Image (cartoon, rainbow, N blue to C red; front, side, top):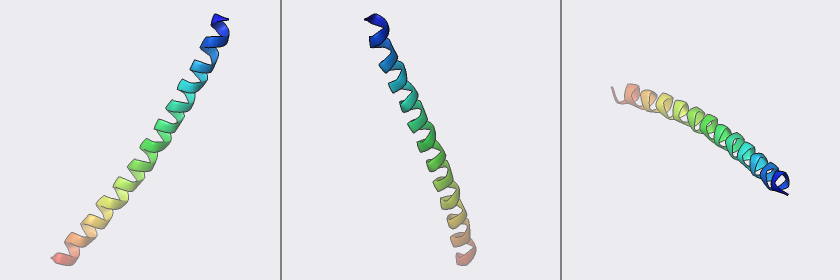
Length: 46
């Protein structure tokens, strides 16, 4: 019974890690685009 209880927990943790990794990658990509846009805006102002 203990093993049956632990396995779903491990699977849930793995899914959470995968979701977190995907979110971090998505945010990283978004930040890079944001910084790029910000630099272009600064160039336009100058």
